[in-house]
Image 1 (tube, rainbow, N blue to C red):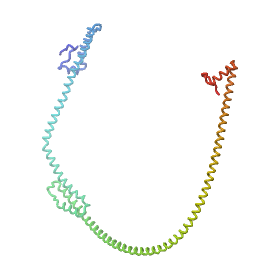
Image 2 (image 1 turned 90 degrees about the horizontal axis):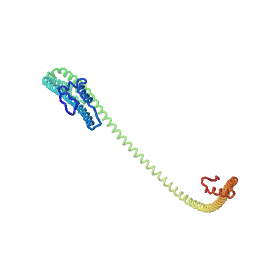
Image 3 (image 1 turned 60 degrees about the vertical axis):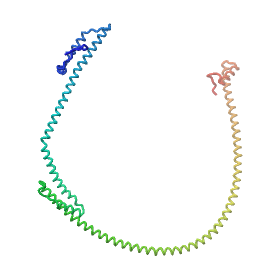
Image 4 (image 1 turned 180 degrees about the horizontal axis):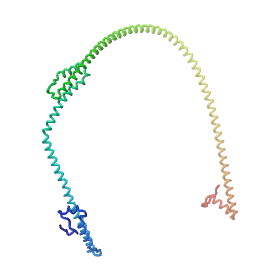
Length: 355
């Protein structure tokens, strides 16, 4: 154990640090030593030396805290390395034993893989046979090819324990494909017969259609010839009627033109007469409007003059009443008149006459 000049207490050595820090209140002896020096110190702030001594003691307390804490920090750091070393050794042990396990099991793994490959090969062969059961909807040629493929497949000892299963799958597939082939051949024969019947029916329909077209064409040609002859007769009659109607129309148009000209002359004369009457009426209306305007203006001027006279009389009456009130209050008539005049002209502040 050693003691620095800037510390108040010794710190635990590395040999005893773990025992001190893990014990309950293990640092109490070191804390009590610091407390004893603090209690023995008498502070004096009256002199600079005394104040420096106080600062020195406080600094030593801080340094003691740092020194004791560093011992604990170093101890914790060393203890944290222990789990890492243990974990590293555990990993080395696991990796070694895994490698030894793989080394010991290698022959068994190789046998198991070979066995799995052998079983998978036989199972794939059986799957290929069973797959033919899904070919029953093919045409006759494809079904025949699949049957020949199955018939050419040898089932023997090389199938090992799968020989019986492969034989059953082959027999089942052959039976299904042969039945499907018979159904397909029957279906295709029926379809061929239906196709032949449809072709014969189509030929008959084509021949009937061509005969009908030729017959309809002859009938249409005859009908069109009759229609043209009838049209020519009707056209001759129509031309004659149109010529007659045109002559009558021209005669009527001449008559209507003469009547329209006479009617337009009469209407023009009537419009001229009406225009004269309208102009005369507008002139009379304008003269009447001007007379009314002059009368209205004169009435307005007279009304404004009467209103001014009435307002003047009204204000004179109010001023006279105010003057009489001033006189009744002891003012002379001249002063009262002057006071009312000044108030009426608003020359007296804050006083006015309400009219």
